Length: 147
Image (cartoon, rainbow, N blue to C red):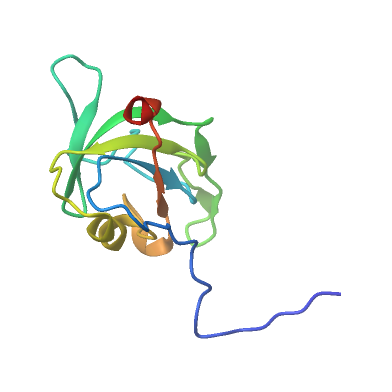
């Protein structure tokens, strides 16, 4: 047996505990839905630096650098176009479960600002359909804990 209940509110996404944290340095972007970056791995406008070791760009007015990425097997979707009675083109997406390890360019950005502008937002193409939904996490780099 199955049941269905409708509501006008969606359940909230997990929140990030930022108690005691002020300025952002490093963070992780986790993708919880596939993202469409026109066949690429990063949003439009992201460029590799001169050393070709990181990607830099801006997402929702936050300038950031992607230092590393964990990306699974490409997510591909196609199907049948019922209106035109023909196959739909197969598209490739960044798969859900992917993660970007990021650093903010502006070291004065607060965690609160970062969460407001990125946490739970959808980025990339077809964001209005829920593509590219992201969550923000802490990047606990061992280098910053040495001492």
